[in-house]
Image 1 (spheres, rainbow, N blue to C red):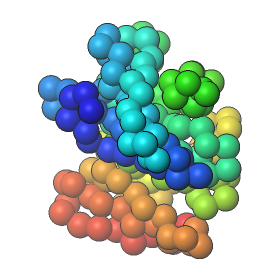
Image 2 (cartoon, rainbow, N blue to C red):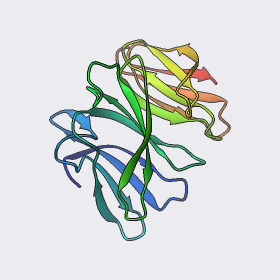
Image 3 (spheres, rainbow, N blue to C red):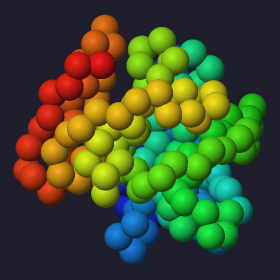
Amino acid sequence: LPGSPAQSALSPDGNTLYVVSSLDGYYNCCSLSGDDITTVNTTAMTPVNSSFPAGSVCEALAVQPTTGNVYVACEDTLLQNTPPVIYITSLNSDGTMSLVNYFTIGDESYGLAFSPDGTKLYVAMVNSSVIQILDPTLGTILGNIAVGINPTSITVNAGGTRGYVTNFGSNTVSVVDL
């Protein structure tokens, strides 16, 4: 795989693994090299390099469980002078990815997770010390949950009732009711 693999997410059918590579200490999805998000066919373990236009540094990704769209949290965005964004991408039949939509978020995110039914996107807002709950279609804020200092990831239990949040700045794991 290109760069240093940093995070991954599996498609709902288990046939595709999405990998964000870390280059120069950042997780990049959108650099000029065009090989920073890699799709991997899990049956043949064959990588297919995908690319977005240049200009973004991306830290997190998650796969929407009902549509299979990949949500990628990025800062230093393609959209000049804007807050960080979440790009929504889809998988093409040739294994490459296409941009479907995007929405802005107010802070950097190092972790994304979906509710099991895909109706909520949980975003670890690293500088705000909250988990932001978003409508994944519109990007509207549904609520915030206070957690420890500098949350970097969230994992949601199978029932969608509890989240486990790693907090880099406080060396803790927050357990939150969803």
